[in-house]
Image 1 (spheres, rainbow, N blue to C red):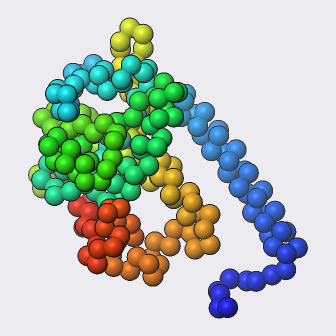
Image 2 (image 1 turned 30 degrees about the horizontal axis):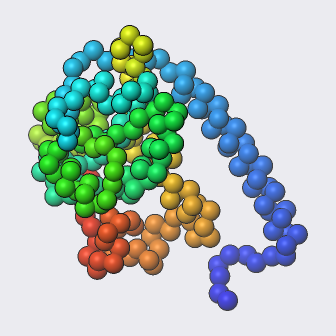
Image 3 (image 1 turned 135 degrees about the vertical axis):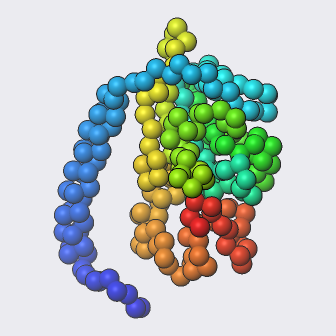
Amino acid sequence: MQTQHAVVSRPQWEAARETLLSREKALTRSQDALARERLDLPWVLVNKAYQFQSAHGPLGLADLFGGNSQLIIYHFMYGPDWEEGCVGCSFLADHLDSAITHLRHHDVSVVAVSRAPFAKLDAFKRRMGWRFDWLSSEGCDFNFDMHASVPLADGSVEERSGASAFFRDPDGEIFHTYSAFERGVERLVGAYNYLDFAPLGRNENGPHFNLGDWVRHHDRYDDAKPASCHACA
């Protein structure tokens, strides 16, 4: 067997594992403390009327809560003129349906929002076999106000992957409580956590993904042509 890793006895491995475990525990405690700080962030009252397009017609932000007091919106990168949704966002979206059932029992609703027209979103959603609610913010300022879409000097718009959290109080007032973008939403991708346990880790430049994309739309893993991502091009 050929390997670049040191091969040691079981007692030596256990000693090395204990050393790493102490660092892992310290990181867990640090993450717990950071989570408490996240909950202590001040909130912003949302007083602008946003309108989203859905399978049921126009909806306001309050409608997206679905009767719960907490809402998480995933900012799915899908620009108005794109042919399909972002590959990385699709990777994350593959994890949503299984989580939503549990989150609903914790008073949390989760939806995705993109700037592309609803017809495009719905067609791509059907292709990918997803069930979560995916709405279009076409024609309103929501993406720009949340900094999920950023106007550039050349007149184009940069789309950003991320998630924003909201709270609706008993009086119906809505507050923006948190947002995270790019690697800040990695924790929502369960497959990353499995790969971090695997012997080769995420292996983002490994031999299995040498066609240009580390991950693909899940219906294209057998396609010789890698999927493109507007944000990564």
